[in-house]
Length: 79
Image (cartoon, rainbow, N blue to C red; front, side):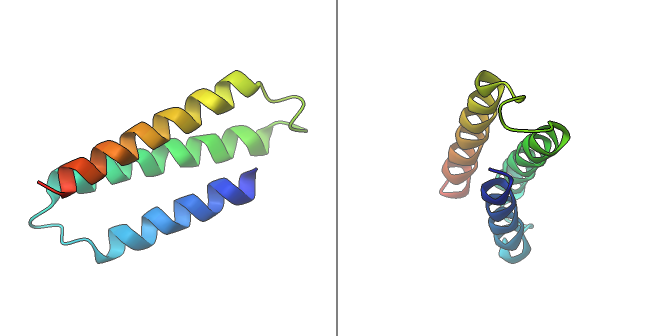
């Protein structure tokens, strides 16, 4: 699970590296917000001794929130 979060965080970070910050400030902020949500989920998974100790409702809520913020960032980037 943490590998999936790590891959998504790395993907967003690489995309932010190539994003034109001058013209896409709102989408940059939304992408950074999603990056922070993904990082928080990585820390949550890492701090639990096993995935059985992690509450699946929190994991699902974090994934849905990160996806919603990423969709918002893509919408802001296309304007």
